[in-house]
Length: 280
Image: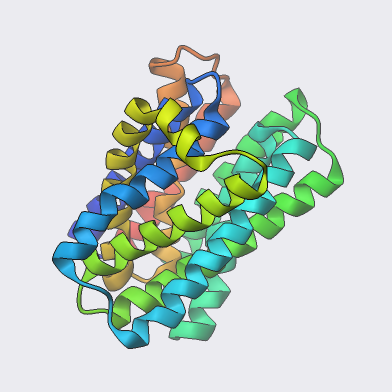
């Protein structure tokens, strides 16, 4: 069981995460919009760093390590999307993060879950796996693409753990989160440049939407980073991944996409997981 405020905060973070992803997904070039949003988040975080100051010296190994692991995970996800369908790869990645974060949290933080917490992680991950199975029916499912998605999930669990350690060592959540955003932006800009494109020109082309999304994504990230400071890692990771279910609801009611009975079964599984984490 986790406290009411962290519980509600993580769900709010998940909802904001789903909203900005839906905004990017509704664009004809969602990959470019997501890349630009990450770079824009770095730019809007620079004033926060100027105000809050740089993180403490002991925080930097975890901060830099998390940024590097996150960048590797992003690259693995991009490969996964080229080798299998987005609808299959994305739920696999998101389901894998809390499942893999659970043993990592035990090893790194000695955070043993309650029976309800463990059940909640399993139910939420099962909901995401069900979404992946639904997507598998409609899209290609090359084994190598699934492998890259699983590796991206491992990277995701790794950077969640790194961020949890870093923010717990830091005295200033805003300073840590803002510097992570700057680091992610620099790494992604370098990746765009390596691909032969100009990151400045790309950002300028999509500036209005990208900066709007970046404000939502940074709000989501700040809330989540604070929650990692006060909440068991695996529980926070599992609750954050309910963003996929929020995204499904947005797809159904806002984007008017077709949502079938199995999607609602996944939503019920996730709801059961949320209740288990909160009450037991």
